[in-house]
Image 1 (cartoon, rainbow, N blue to C red):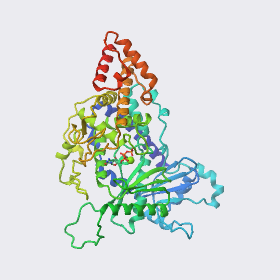
Image 2: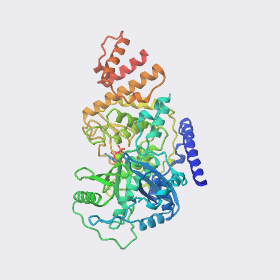
Image 3: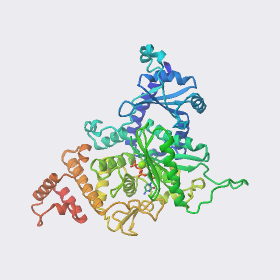
Length: 554
Ligand code: CTP
Ligand code: MG
C-alpha cells in the first residue's frame, strides 16, 4: 500500500514539477534549455530496455488488473502496470518488470491454444484467461484494485481539441502549451511503440540475431502525437565493422539491392500476415522509393510502416529530436502548426499531392532558424566530434553534433509563442515559393535547383527535395491559408488583445472573404484602387501592402 501511495504522490509531484518547470521555462527565455538534454542514443537505449522488460496482456476488464498483477508477480518484481482500453471493449495491461529475466520466465510458463493450422509464436503479446475458481472473489478484486503500482490517466486515444479547455485560457501562448501537453505522445504511447518494434525484432531473432528493429519518425523525434503512425526500420545492430576480427560471416551475394529489398518486403509482409499476433491489414508497398510493409497493430490500435533499411531516416529523427529539445518554443510551435494544417485539411492521412507533417515541421524549424532560435545544420556539422561521425551503408554522411548541450549558444530572441506563431504565418504568407528553395543546412533560402512547387532541401540527402510530392495547387491553398491565419490572429489580437486557438482551426471561410474585402474597402477609402479578394490572396507584394494598410488603419 505504501508503495502505491508514494508512487501516486510521486506522480502528482512529477505533474506539479512539469507544470512548474513549464512556467519557469516559459519565463526563463531558454538560457538553460539544454541542461537537461537527454542524448538520443540514451533515450532509445532506455526505451528499448524498458520494452524488453515488458509484456502486453489483454484482459476482460479493468477489474482483472489486480488478479493479473498477483499472477505476474510470481515471475518477478513488477515495476509498472498501465491499463488502457481501445475502441470497443478491448482492455489491455502493459506490465513492466524490474528485470528482463522475469519476462523470459513468464513467457516460458505461458501456453498457446492448440490449433493445427497455426504455428505457435512466442511474443510479448498475451491474453489472460479468467480463473473460474476465483469468480466469487470478485469483490476483493475490486477492493484491491489499486494495491499495486497502477498507472491510469494516460490515454491512447487522441483527445478532441474542442474538449481540452483551450477556450479557458486567455493567452494564445498558454493555449499552445496546453495543446502540446494534451496531444503529444505520452509515456504509455512511447512504451507501446517500442514494444511493437520489439515484437518484430523477437520474431526475426532466430534467423537474424544481428538485426534490431527501431522506431523512427514522429514516434521518437519529439514531435509525435497520441495516435500517430509508427515508422519502423530493421537495422544492423552492429554499428561499426570490427576491423580486428579475422573471422567474417559468409553472406549472400546480392546482384540488385533494390530487387532484394523488394523481395525482403514481400517476405516480411508474409511473416506479419501469417504468424505475428495483432498484425492485420498487411500491405506490401514494394514500388515506393523506400519500400515498406504497412500494417495495423490491433493491440496498440495504430498503423505501422516497416522498412527494411532506412538508416538516413533514423539519423533524420535524431536531428529533429535535437531541434525539438533545443528551445522550449520549438515543440509547441510545431504542434500548433501541424494541428492547424490537420484541422483545415491541408494535410491528409493518405499520402498524395498535399503537404506532409514532415515538411511542415521542417518549415517551422526553418522559420525558427530565421529567428535565430535554433542553429542551422552546418553549425551542428562543424561542431561534430569524433564519436558523432556516422556514414550510412548507402554512403550518406549523417555526421553532426549529437550532444547539443555542448553547443555554445546565446539565444537573444525573447519572442513569445504567440508572436512566433503569427511570425510563422506572416513569414511564409509572403514567401516566394516560386524561386526559393528552403535549406535548413545553411539556414537560408537558395535558388531552386529544379522546378517543384515547393522545394525543401533534404537536410541529410541534399540532392533530394523533401516536398517533391506537393502540387502547385496545394502550395497555393497553403499560401491562402497562411494569409488567412495571419490575418485572423493579427486582427483578433489587435482588436481584443486575446485569441482563441480554436478560431484558427476553422480555416479559410469563403463568407469571411467578403467580410475581409468589405472591411478593407471601407477602411481604405482614400486609396485609389479597389481592393479585391484577388488582391488579398494572390500576390505576395500585394499581401504585404494589405498587411501594412491593415496595421495602419487599425
Ligand atoms: N523522412 C525523410 N524524408 C522524407 C520523408 C520522411 O527522411 N522525404 C523520414 C523523416 O525522419 C520522418 C520519417 O521519415 O520523420 C517518417 O516519415 P513520416 O511518417 O512521413 O513523417 P513523421 O515525421 O513520422 O510524421 P507523422 O506523424 O505525420 O507520421
Ligand atoms: Mg510517421
